[in-house]
Amino acid sequence: MHPRRLLAPIALLAVAGVVVAGCGESQDDAERAFCADLASFRSSVTTLTQTRSLDAFRAERTNVDDAWQQLRDSANNAGTSHFDEVSDAWDTLHRRLDGVKDLPGLVSAAPELRTDVDALTTSARRLSDSLTCSDGE
Image 1 (cartoon, rainbow, N blue to C red):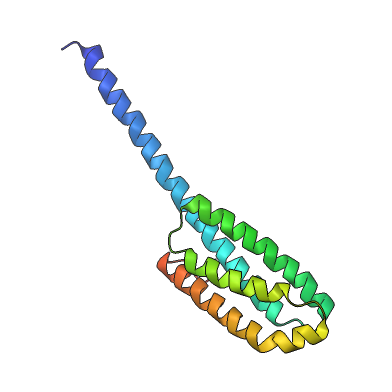
Image 2: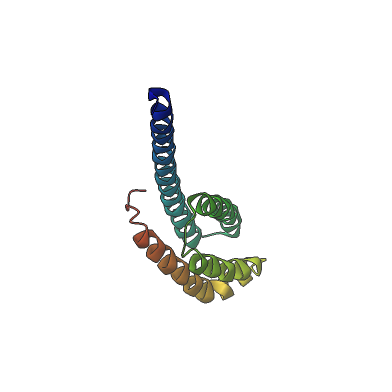
């Protein structure tokens, strides 16, 4: 066999190895970004639960919505499985948050909101543990 013909498959395999290695790094980066976004989302939800006024609640609600969008995008990028539980818990909380229009509504919804936040936090923790996200991310 001619040396050039022998080199072509070897070069192709070398290029394929670099591409596969690059994909692995890209996946790791996507999972790290997802873990960071998950931590940010959890922090936003915690801050929302600590608000003491309707104005602060509305501002934090916007922050939580933004953090959710970022988390959902990074879950898609990371190809994260088991995201459905978190998504379902978010949908439940989101519907309840949509029902809060004034301070009396916030006060009356507080027990249910706490239950919804606890369910969301639990599902987010499970997902984080399944990905071995560090607590620092």
